[in-house]
Length: 393
Image (cartoon, rainbow, N blue to C red):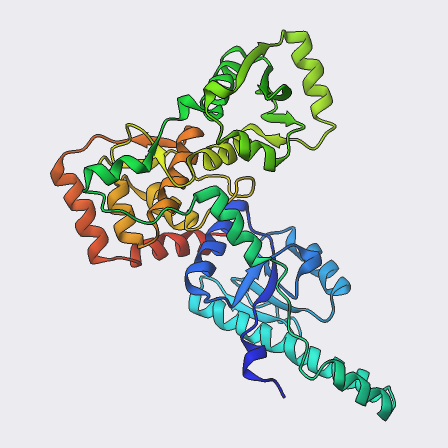
């Protein structure tokens, strides 16, 4: 018999047949409405799977998954019921409540399978072995999440800082939320990135600190950054004032750039955006660049690629609202009711990646935005998400 605690364990779910944007909106909706019911993982760590059957490539993936993981529950999203035995069908268009109900059913199937398996194993051993096993383990083995939540929490402290919220109307306290990227490694890397893109040639950034020299090579044509620097040291360098660093930029000619690009394609580098995003987060630590007006409406030019960028707390909520329509950061903080440092960290990263557009608007337009959001605090946000989900595939 399944106990209540076991039924509340987070189910590890793989997702097939959705493009990155549809998956991101699904993940965001789960974070906001799922109450820890499920988290999305790679196939080899999954305990269940969701398949968008209206994607023509998904049928082959489904057959392979069923052969590889016969014990895992399967949820099928489609306009038409495929009548597949033991699968849980959710008809499109669907709402989030319907999908959550299907995930609960999948969780129950998985736990029942574990219970049956445990019973079969126990019946194969002698009574003495049962007594020894009971001493070691008296409860049903829980479904263990693959995510180390404490590690993620510590990581977000590193990315977003630990500063408490302040009264944004208090001018003296407001000074503490600003930093100057141009006085840090971040500022130099943004200059190097812009120069590399303008000249369409590789730029090597040489960084000297305490008699050690490190390099970061930016390859704009293939959007890659190559460096031997580990994250721990890079994040430390982001806290060092620029006057303590000696940084030089070396522009490579066309032939050398092609040679570096050819070598980089064989290595496991990261995108320039992914590196600069992390560096902006490490540098800002929950602050925003000096000169940002919290009451000026801003918006995102396009949706951030969260498959490559570290998603800070609240990132999907912030992106959904700023991608929908221009909004002042002060209003955004008020509407989402999340720590200010989460909004500031996201904004600093987006600004470094040139994702932000500033919209000039009169006071009446800003008031209209606020009225609209207060009248429908979550309906518009989830409406936007569900529209994307329903169009998936």
